[in-house]
Length: 223
Image 1 (tube, rainbow, N blue to C red):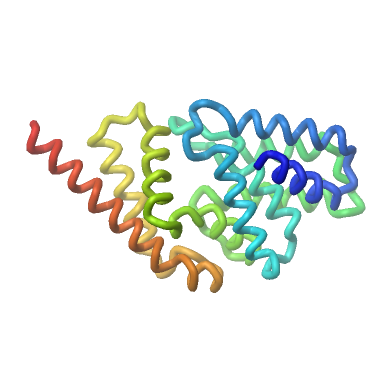
Image 2 (cartoon, rainbow, N blue to C red; image 1 turned 120 degrees about the vertical axis):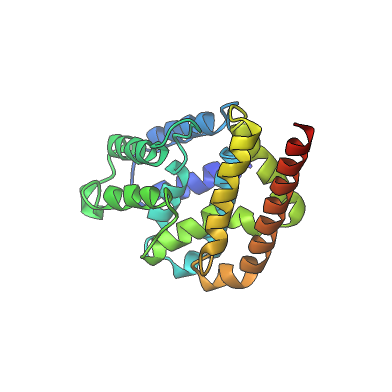
């Protein structure tokens, strides 16, 4: 997987004519970040899945390299006890991409990096008006529309990332997040994801909510 990701990263950065050695150093820094032991879900596997989904949707993009770079950086800062992960991830992306020296004649850093940081910021509330934001958001939530086994592994990994939260508090908070997705007219923005994953995503979410309710009821009975 790492070799495939490195090749993808190098291809993306070729669009900006940056120094290959510097670009590779950033890649390995990102791999190290996404390999932190606290990352049970928001890890390098998640980045790989997001990039794979973007690749499926790439014919709809307006700025594919920007979406790909936003995907790489969107969870570069991720701590479950913080409320500003997206803002810090966007700032990290801005600093790193500026240091790489993407040439200004390609619209960066004045324009292109701003777009990348805005894409990252849109992942905070999963709201996007332009097609590139919508593609990134759909890719970020692609896990919701996977098979039940993969979804259960995802749900378990999220719980592990919030291991510091008590059971009752976690169930309450998690249900609010999941119910928020169900209350939306559509979970996914793009027609491709709606057709291929919307129905399954809603089913997976409903099943997780039911499981959380059962856990909550069992805890109440024990008390």
